[in-house]
Amino acid sequence: MAEFLEATGVTGPASSRRYLWTDAYAVCNLLGFHRRTEDPSYLALARRLVDEVHRVLGGHRDDDSARGRLGGLTEAEALRRPTAAGLRIGKPLPERTPHERHDARREWERDGQYFHYLTKWVHALVRMREETGEARYGEWAAELILAAHRGFTYVDRSGEKRMFWKMSIDLSRPLVTSMGAHDPQDGLVACLEARTSVVDQVSESRLGELDAAAADFRGMGDRLDWATEDPLGIGGLLDDAARLTRLVFRHGVKRRDLLRRFLSESERSLFTFSRMPLLARPASERLAFRELGLSIGMHGLELVRNFAADDRALDEPFRRVLRYAPLAVRIDEFWSDESNRRNETWTDQADINDVMLATALAPAGHFGS
Image 1 (cartoon, rainbow, N blue to C red):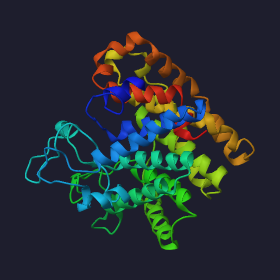
Image 2 (image 1 turned 45 degrees about the vertical axis):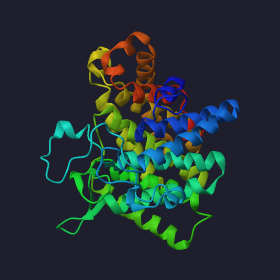
Image 3 (image 1 turned 90 degrees about the vertical axis):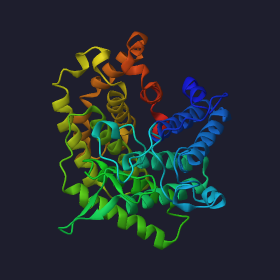
Image 4 (image 1 turned 180 degrees about the horizontal axis):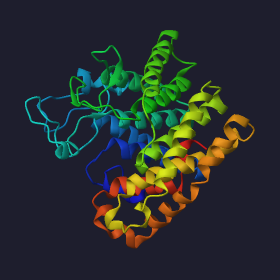
């Protein structure tokens, strides 16, 4: 984490290099270090990183013809409402123009807004609200998930609500029109987290907006098959299950049926993944951050396991999923080996790999446990 913070300009003289997914995990890691050590410098770094993300990714790119803050906000408005128009991904290349041909491979390196990155940042802001007690972080989380709901959801020709996978920086047009299989579930959990963080501080109308968005996400997610062979996708299911467990048992959110489905789909996915040869391959044939996503999710479920120990309907599903916990141990041990981190598959994406390995090894900050 120290190397990441210095290399990306949070500490030291380097220019600020922000990437929303990585920074969301980094904020949570710093909060975990603060709770573990009671060293105030970690909390100060978390605050600084949040502010840097909002400053850099809440504004247009330096190479963009558009200028200023996203959504046309003034600088003063952006300080008060930094998430009102979403946040850029932070990819190295400019977004595709309206007249430019779509290139699927090149699109991975182009900027824009990803829904599943916005939900990661919602979670980071909720964790900031929990650790600092400052209402503004919860308000920013709620405003962000509502902006994402408005920007990414639409009604198709059959009258059903759907989502785009990737939007332009200004949320005016889709860049990838397909719907991510897990985006609605991520949106639902983010809505529930944001609502919990602002329930005592915002109007009934704002809570109603969050409830309506949650209902939309639930309706879209119910129509999808959540099972996946992708370790990062499995990790997303586990991560959502762990966070939802906290909401159900610590905050009284009535979503046990949803939690049971997360656990069931995670088990089904893990059964398939455990029979695949991926974890036996050399580092040159593996992508660390995708595997570390699975590890983080599994560790999160281990951290919240005791919440459901006395719940008969949930205890057995938890046990069935946690039978696959040795997969996380294998992943952690493999990528903790420095020789495996010398490979280009690691070094080419060192920021995200470093931060997610830190989360896997010290997951309490991410899950608030």
